[in-house]
Length: 277
Image 1 (spheres, rainbow, N blue to C red):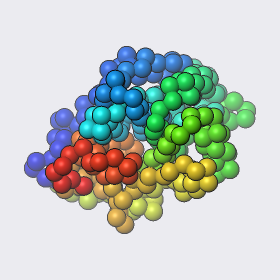
Image 2: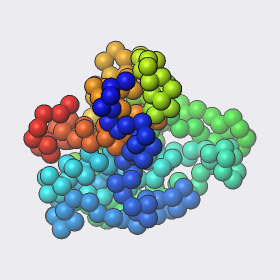
Image 3: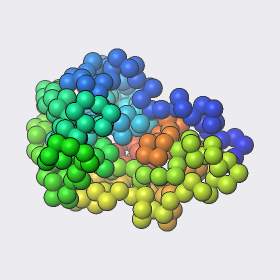
C-alpha cells in the first residue's frame, strides 16, 4: 500500500461525495421530495442537473468543480437506493414490508421529473446503480431480478418523461463493482493490496450495455466511466489513490481526481489546468 495513500485509511469513512452537500438537501429514504440546494453559480442562466441515486451523489465533488469552473449552476436531484428510471424496486429487507414495493421511491421520482421539466436545465446528467431487485410477485423474499427487457423499458420511459426543448441529455454509465474492494478490503490486506482487484469482465455490470444501447437509441449521449477504473482488471488503489469507498461507490477524493476526464466526457473544459487522469 502506498505510504501517501489518499484518502488515508483513517480518513476514508468520511471521504464520501455526498458529504459535499448538507444532509438537509438530500432526500431521505422515506422522503418524496427534497430541499433543492444549488451549487456552482446559482445566478447563471445555464443550469446542469444531475439526477439519480447514491451513484449520482458520489460524483458530486467532480460535478461541483466542473460547474463552478464553467460558471454554470448545478442542482443534485439524488436519492440513495433509488434508481433514476421508473421501475418499482423492492423495499430493503430491514425496512417495513420487506419484499414489498418501495412506494416512496415512486413518488420521489414523480416530483423530480416535474422539477426538471419545470426548471428546464441546459444539461441533464442521469446516472444510477443498476443492480436493483424487484418485488417478488408473492410479496415475499427473496426478491426478483429485473430482466433486460424490463430494465430497458424503464430507462426508455424515463427518457420519454422529460420534456425540455434544446436540452442536452447524458447518461453517465454505472461504475464497475469491486466486490473485494473499498476501505474494508484495503485495511484487511494492506500488505497485499492485489487481493482487492477484480477482472473487468466481472466488475462491469451486466446492465451497462443495455443502458448504453437504450440511451443511444433515444438520442441520449452515453459516457462510459469504465476506462477511468479498469484495464483488464479493476483495482482498489490506482497510483496513490484509494478508488473505492465501498465495493460499489467511489471515494470523494477519486471523484475529485476524475473531474477533468468527466468534464471532457460532458463537453466542458477541464476545471483543473494541471494534468490529472
